[in-house]
Image (cartoon, rainbow, N blue to C red; front, side, top):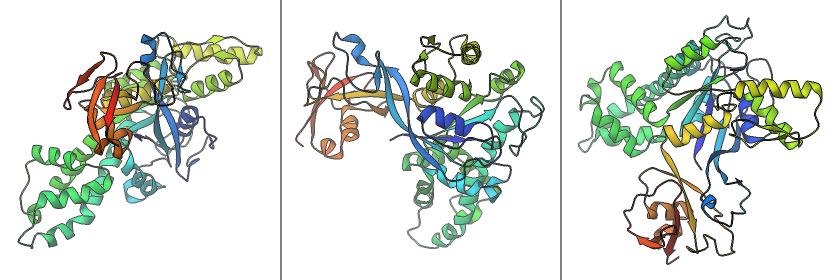
Length: 392
């Protein structure tokens, strides 16, 4: 399952984001290091369900009025403080957990109401742009420290006649979440000595930074946007490539209100309707959330997850079926499964995503929309419904 990690300094709202996005029961507190032990849960990215094109809607529990929610892992661990890569705070514990993450959401306190250590200060007195730079720097230095710690062994290995530097670097970096392809791409674009003894600190830091950029892309979540000065949001937007204003508190409030039957709301909706009885205080709170959602951006929580997966990672959703006419599995369930795949994936990649045995027994595939057989090297599109024919 694709993994998304929440990063950021303490008290920026990571645990609130996690609780809202996973509907899990976790501690939320207005003090640093509320989270000590890592939280791992299931959240969802949202896309249009193909059943919208059919008279018979799918009955999957993750499809709500043709809004399809595809599961992803969400990871929330202890906050970062300056010097985390050297072990300050709970930094090493957090950073080591990141090895399995495919993308990172850097949750920033856009209100400027917490200092660099996560301690509460007067709202607006801390510059949130500093929190964007510091998280990226800590991640880069963390990975650079891993490279440094392993460099002596690489130098020793270089004395062997069959030594291959690229192979040694690949073996080291795949241990922190990179793939062989990631490492090959980074090294191809780098200018570096063939002899590891000739490498400088700059070479190693460049390698670490480029591998991190490729394997741990970052979305900045400008949290607490409901109380943040507008200029803070604008400056954050200028400081990073992808910034999503958000109110994790607002999303959590809406999900609780929806569960209680007070509002009609699905995660990622641009607004909501009050449909049940509510107190004056509840109604005032809901209207404040509505103001934040104005302009069609929602609360930002679902939007951050969606942008991370579909835009930054460039993933698509494909739907395997057994019956290409009815779009069902063997039990008659319409569109029972949805799989996230990298753009450029083929039907055989989808077969392996369903199960390794299905991939190994792959024979051919059928496009269920077009009712035609497709080639093995056909590139899938988002929303494709595919029948996999396999010997297994």
